[in-house]
Structures are given as structure tokens and as C-alpha cells.
Image 1 (cartoon, rainbow, N blue to C red):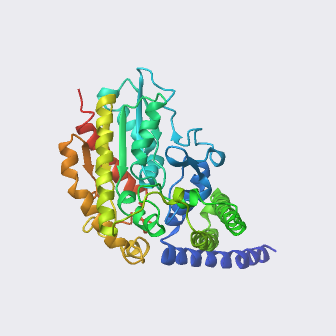
Image 2: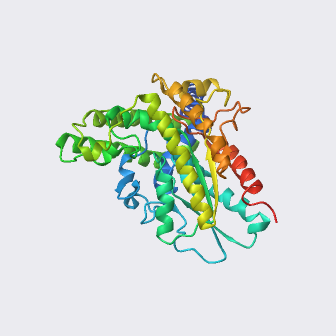
Image 3: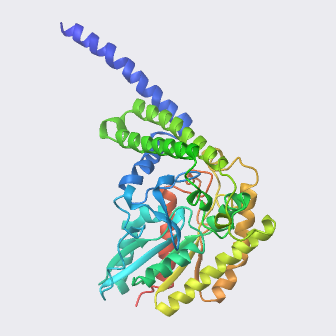
Length: 416
């Protein structure tokens, strides 16, 4: 009897063990291993459960956004309990203005939003450890939203101040969205490049039946991805290589469906109204990008002037990007997953960063505390970038945090 039980157990568990090992091999060979799978899954889960969620390749979940009369768009609090009625995440600094409070605001696009999500706790601890802030209550708010680009950061900060918020330290992390997104999104569609990203979608006439159907299917596909990510993050399934492989294959299929739906939605846009288009883009792409770089610098200068008038500290950080020549030795995996196959993306971004770099000296002369972080990954050979846009993982954000906190402590918050 005992031998029979052992035999049955052997017959059951040996195939299972073989499948587990085979699944592990496939995960390592095709998807970067179980660690990368868990990171991707957590990015989806965090959309609903961890503040604004990590932003992944290409786009974010469209249903998270609602139009805003001053800022273009903000997060929709309906879909995320962490979003405030103002459409942002983090502490409510409008209500926190006592002498004991020290209010920090993170501004920018998706890279800044990811920085806030992943580094909030460490930012609070690092600031609280500074002698000058040892007796302060550190509050951290985020007006960084995926797709934001100047002058949205400038407008968002003014909006907060007009509502009575007190800001003590503003950290603006940007660069990529300002000089690349408008040329990929607004410019080809005849929309004014200084209008918000996705402006044509946010203002499109939803009376079209086909568009309503596509939006419904897109919402269902995105919700299915988030739900499945939550299920497979359970302790039992998370440890199973078979489950991890199954989740990745299903998620890839759903992600492909979402991309196809987004592409069809973009193609379904008819004739845009003058309200949707805004002023004409009369210049060629190079001239337009030059104007975009100038707007980036001017907006930062105005933020600096605003900080001086409002007596708060302002730090401007130029975010790293994989398309900046010499900025990182890309791994074999990054060469496959973090470099766009779309013609012109790398060249456009590299040229754009050159245009931004030419304006750094004038920002310094204007008194802006500016940190050029484009080279902080130049000696890192491990995988950091995880999509073809600009986003990097926790290790990359940790490196960025070290650079930002060192700069802050040396410039705007030196020891007494």
C-alpha cells in the first residue's frame, strides 16, 4: 500500500516538477525571468491599489483620465481611491499649511509619476533626516501625470497655489515628453503642439457608435489585465512558474488586443474641429522641436521666478533617456525591448535632448537649480529601461533618487 501511494505521488508530482522547470526556462529565455514577470504584474496591479500605478510602454489606461478646464486632463478619482477630488495623488497640501508642515511637490510626466510611486517613502525619510528639516512633518504631493508636458507642470503648480496650497520644495522631472511626444501625437494629427497630449481623444465626439464600442472593448481588456494581475499575484500562484508563464501569455494577448483597439481608435478620428486643433503648426518638424525646447526652458524659468516670489525651493531635473548617446550601455535585453522600431524615434529624441542641453546654461544663469540627470546610468550595465519610451525600473529610480537627494541637500537644503 505504501509503495502504491509513493508511486501515485511520483506519477503526479514528477510531471508537475518537469512542467515547473520547463516554465522557468521559458520565462528566463523569453521574458527576462520570474522577477521581471512579477515587476510587470505589479505595475498593472498598482494602477488600482498603489497610488497612480507605474506607467508602461506606449500609453496608460485611457479611462483613468478626465478633461480638466485648466490643465487639459487629470486622473479620474472614480477609478482609483488614491486619487484626490483635484485629480492628483499624494498628500493634500492645500489642507496642510502649518508651521510644522514641509510640503514637497513632484511635477512632470510618467517618469516623475513613477518616481513618486516607487520612492515616496524613501524621499520622506531622506528629507526628514536632514538637520534643517528634523522637526518638520514631511508631506509629499504629486502633480505628475502620464503625458504631462510643459506648460502643464507650470499651470498645475499655479493652480495649487491659487487654491491656497503652500509649497516648500518643488521637484520637476521632465524632458522627454516636451520634445518627443508632441511630434508623435499632436503634430501628425494637425493639433497644436503645445496642447495637451491626447487632446484630440479627450475632446473627440463620442456620439460615434463605433468609437463607443471600441472604447468599451478597450476598457474591458484593460480591466481584464488588471484583474488577472491581481489574481496571479496571490501567494500560491506567484510562486508557481507554470502560473507565471500562463499569466504572461494571456496578458500579452490582452495587451495586443488593447494596442489594436487604440490603433483603431486613433484611425477613427474624423475631421477635427478648430477647438480640437488649436492654432496651426506652421513650421517643419525641426523648427517645431526648437520651439518646444524653448517653451520647456521658458516654463522652467517662470517656475523658478514663481518659487522666488513664493519663497519655496525649486529643483529642475532633466530625466535620463535611453536614446541620449553614451548615456547607458544597453544590455542585450534592453536593445530588444527598450529601443523603438518606429523610424525616427531615436533620432528625434536625441536631437531634442541636444536642443534641451543647449538651454541648460541659460537656465543656470537665470538662477534655476538645475540637475542634468541624463548621464546617471552611464556606468550601469544591468537592465533598467523596460519600454521603448523612457521608463525605467526600481533600480533606475533608486539611482535617480540618489542623484536628486544629493543635489537637493547640496543646493536648496544645505545643512545649517
